[in-house]
Image (tube, rainbow, N blue to C red; front, side):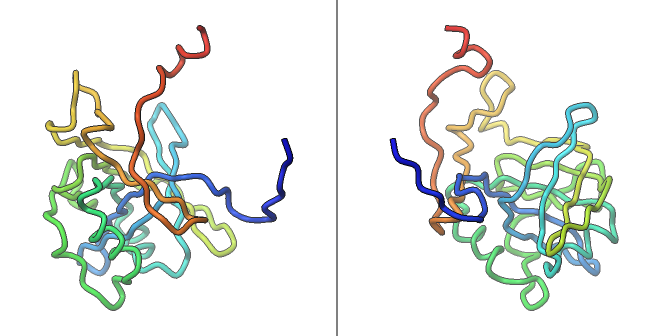
Length: 184
């Protein structure tokens, strides 16, 4: 099978879409973000990568808190809007119902099936981006997307971003059991 070098570029693989929330100058703001990953288990930590120009960065640093909210397919239009409009010029505080967990500094979205409340642990400067590492203080799921007290991805209907294709996708079917399929 022939291989094609796609060049020096970001990895063209789908990523989960989230809405990162923070209070900026006292106002709630949300930014669509797909560059995120888990970085620690105990304590649980998540990292989000934001361009240094984003309005949200200042609020995360100022309040030492942020949220990572995972929207469903039905939220696609508002989610994309949060990625193409800056909080510098548009007030996005009324787009969603907002609630708070333990902290009153990390705004969470009522409509999102899954919300993660984070306390800022560290900021890493990386050329044009900042990497925000947050300790997960709480994970909030709508009861309607749970099966046996675990998130049911089919019910939560997450959005995936294929950045190189500039397209959103929905999650496909379950194809196997993690940490079991390789044993067969």
